[in-house]
Length: 243
Image 1 (cartoon, one colour):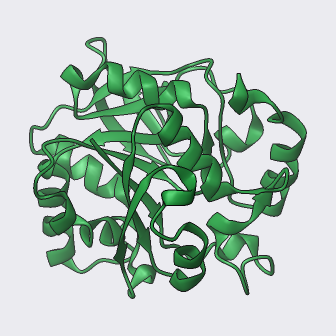
Image 2 (cartoon, rainbow, N blue to C red):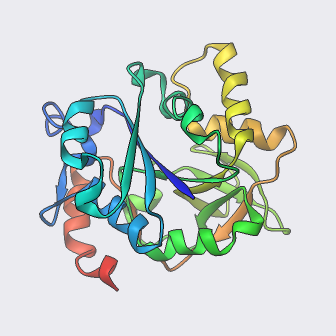
Image 3 (cartoon, rainbow, N blue to C red):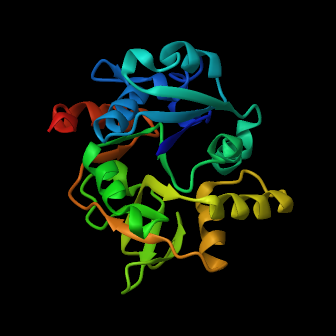
């Protein structure tokens, strides 16, 4: 299986740290956030990935190279129009996924424990799926989070940042298929930007594709959007990813 890492965004809320460096290369405990993502994939048994670049793409390419120094094969897909949103960026990787029935999608600004990716892979028969946390413990997991509403059959029926009714949090780890690109194409035709992934996922669900909720409550993950998130990550996660 291939993993797709979304690493195209500007990271404006981390300015001025991101004025001269892309967000995925900011360091936590001396290591770039993107390297934690690569290590997580490798430790979960995934050895091929596509990195979608946009803002300061060359810096990311120089850091990762072909991936050999990290023990993983890296391909690149570039979105020069990254301001159009992360779903628009994902669309650029479509041709590189033409031989994949299912692919794993992960965010470059999330630090996630390998157990989350392992849980997704163990539930391949339930794909497409989204790993969700029903018991978020840390403020960075909840503030500005994408929320999901899971029904009694364990399928996601709604997703978004402003849900009034929800019972889990999106961790940013998906197993997806071609249906997501069909949803993205539909939204692209409407030309309402920025085009965020949760809008396309919602479209996919509304057209009849069931999205299973893979419960990873208790597993460590953090979404890093601000300098406060970086500081928090330094405090809480040391050693967690090695457990």
